[in-house]
Length: 189
Image 1 (spheres, one colour):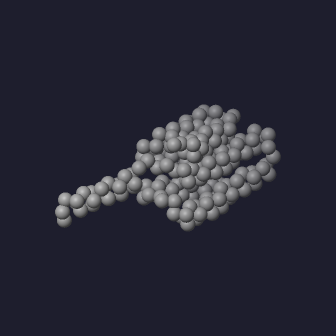
Image 2 (cartoon, rainbow, N blue to C red):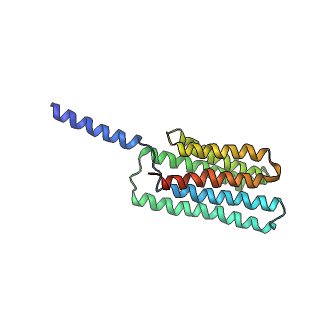
Image 3 (spheres, one colour):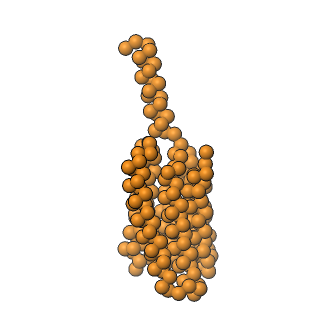
């Protein structure tokens, strides 16, 4: 191998490393955070209203519909992203894998563990799962994700010490921390 061939190989390796280790733009994936942030936040809000006696018990079906709608949207939109081949890097796929695993576990705990966790406990599970996703992304040098994860954790702690407003505080955490992160990614760059 001569000097020019070696230089070409090194430049190619540099391009591959740069493409796979760049900060995750999450533009195409940001909609997942918005949809799930709005669905989970609205679910917390609905249960907060039910708990305060402001909304009738049947409105819990609206919350269930929002969550199932978020699942359906995620499946359809995720399949669309794969078919478009948006140029996702290994790191992009890893972030989405963490998102899918965390939300799937929270969903199973919500549906399968409703006898184990009181209503606000389920909201706390969703908050913890969402914060794991954002903090994982934040560990890869995304400050907006780190801030969103911190907002979710703070909302959990504040909700714990605000028994009269638990649902409202958890909802605010999702609206500001999770959906807010998605919006910030759409507006970034």
